[in-house]
Length: 331
Length: 256
Image (cartoon, rainbow over all chains, first blue to last red; front, side):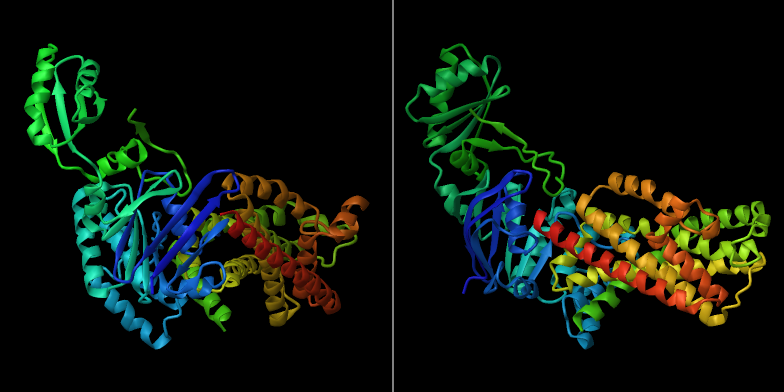
């Protein structure tokens, strides 16, 4: 039985924002499934529907066998949820936070102490357990968030942008934790992210979400294999627009996007095409300063399926429901 | 069962937070204490006018200031919920099977408890200034109960408003607009017999006035029948407040 089944979910907020238009996917037990897309794509709303925090206007969803609309209490007993905004009590200790959450999650009273101890050890916070959370570092707080979501030993874990706002080192450490989580606990994980590298690294399968719809779904390898051609990035000394036009006229060039002083081309058999690309440009009087070749990345997959790029760097963590979209259009 | 335990767990959480940062408990005592001391001195001789239930103004004033404190503190009760909304605490609680009613009940109880503790401090200052408690221990406990009952009802309404508006500014505006007039439209500072007719008419329907009268008669131990009827009115008011907060919570859940 699938741990998560979402079928044709649809949600329009009261202020008229159509957050989710049509989202369908399934997640098997023991699988990390990613929802990848820019801010405002509808990822968080999808997770909030599945976590029973908001009601869908259409479609159905089941989590660990319970329908989110007809049996939200059943869903809540089986889920752990790590929100974008942490929600811990900063003026309480880590242990107090966990104990409260365990009680509210209906962990049998005699087991609470032991479960809290175990999950503290699991996230490596045993030594800091009796310190006020406000003294924790960003990474420690995130680990406490995860511990809070795990203390009742759920079957399904939702992680909404778990690494947004963390420094690279902490992010990498958290990735290790998540891999360990999957390996040791075998629970189903639904992860939303706007980081392509994160999706690539962690997800067994993922769905790319764009403007409230799932545009494509598969393993990262499948998705990348589905994109024809390689990415060739040429840095030119002058006239990038003209360079783009010249390259576009070649048969094996599928697509060209000027990007500042660079020209990014999707080219069949990129490695063997590079000499020809350089020659054609030089003949047009354009000097090529550097050439880079890349196998398709998830960024290319994204571009391929949505027609626009995902800008993933220097994104500030977005608040809930702040639907500001940060995209740059490729064409 | 779940409701009772959840309420206690959450009450513990709110109480720990208050105990760890007790500054607000004391800050909110400052202004009522100033009123008690200044008014108590300034209008000392006002009881020479006919119509007061007692011949000591500080004794008359103490229950009034206690109720004023209950009103003001409870009126700000929604701020804690707003903070929890912003911090994501509410979402963190809502993904658990926690009793939804316990979320409201724990907040309301917490405010009522805090107010009872603060009211005790005011009472002690009143005693130092010369107030006496003919109603005895029962009178004091009843007075604290009356203040807590008003605080519960007001806190529930404040929480409801917080959930509906979800804006600090709105809550601040509402509290500032209503709180002080409600005190002056009661017998907190002046005997009912000395009020202009129109204020007396409004005071009769003002829960703050019910609490002031109930607390005062309990402290004086002079009219237990009146205490009982004001207590019943306040109980009904508190129930209505909680119903409003529960509906507001439903509306909040639907709108997100």
